[in-house]
Length: 97
Image (cartoon, rainbow, N blue to C red):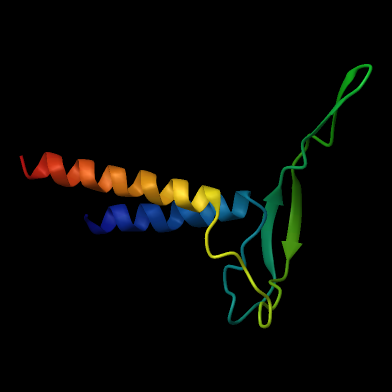
């Protein structure tokens, strides 16, 4: 891959992190991040109501993870890994034919 592809993926992920709720861009220096949150809420009852449909600018501070435990595997992670492996194999197979 050329350098432009790497730059595109880096900045597209920073943009997606910004849109997904915040990213601390200069983390070691400044620990507060900024982002956009989309709190779109649909309520179903006797009628359908849509509330909080405007995006909000939010500020985040990363929390410490020392002493916490996390799941090593998730359903989404396994599915993404299988999809990546399939695409990698398909690309490798088409180049070697």
